[in-house]
Image 1: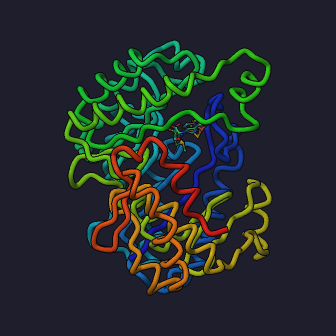
Image 2 (image 1 turned 60 degrees about the vertical axis):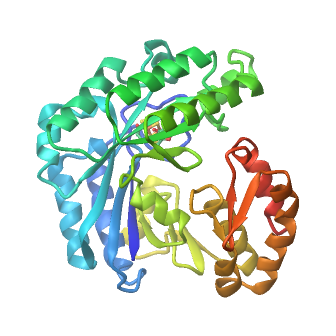
Length: 375
Ligand SMILES: C[S@@+](CC[C@H](N)C(=O)[O-])C[C@H]1O[C@@H](n2cnc3c(N)ncnc32)[C@H](O)[C@@H]1O
Ligand code: SF4
């Protein structure tokens, strides 16, 4: 059982916090879609005929594709791969693309899950982020999607924004939960190099919120999601029962995936592949049958560290038997020995060979994970 990720690297406007690989010009869209189909064909054996359970169109802004372009991509996917009967097929969408007409057309494609980039319900936040939609448009988009028959919806919010107060964050969550969206991805802002936010931080125009405020906003997020019957199933992801993102959960359970498109990553259990991060070169290289990716063979230490960082961030936790059976006995011994002090301090829980971060440990999760890395 495996997944396919497809990167759509086009955006109509560049958000000031974002460092995802994207282009503001749609000039090469047609050639890019042809290259994507060719890449899928070239790599149809990458997943060794495993059943495809999830397909994820991420970006960039996949909602810049029309229904015809989406169907065209999927007819190729269905031709080349063994897709399961009820796959989860997600499209990342910007709120202002989700008009009633667009959503009705989207209903006639295989897409059955929407991940909508709301980010904030406050106009001043949207403005400093350089988003291209208003709060009202986000609310309309969610309601229209629900009325069009999309019930599997996720929304993205960002907290820890400059000048964001706990009260404001609380209000954002109140509005979110009132919309009855079954899945929330809430990310703490990170200042990525090469972004306008990063520059503003460096020249003093933006001030980072304090550590205390940051922790408080995370606390509010955990409390409010609990009150709203959401399961905190991964550091930044919350969902009602049966609404976890199967695709993303696959990444955290070592499932194999093929990532197609410029900058996309792939994983087959033994290696990771990184496609070139350049639109024109990607198109050219695929067209000419030249190598368009770098490949990294994973050592046992890489596999162990990957396993720790992905599993400890989830509700399922890290299975020491899995490490023993699939990586090496020495890493299982290492993690058991290293985790002792965190179990004692109540930050980790160890039961039935599963290590999990406790409620208390969630606030220092990164430090615990780092401490369990094998150097
Ligand atoms: C691929 S991006 C967005 C998809 C879509 N284009 C959009 O903007 O809604 C996925 C999500 O990552 C989050 N994100 C991107 N950069 C971030 C950053 N520097 N800090 C925190 N969250 C970030 C945003 O919430 C964004 O919606
Ligand atoms: S957040 Fe989304 S719309 Fe904004 S630049 Fe990044 S990928 Fe594009």
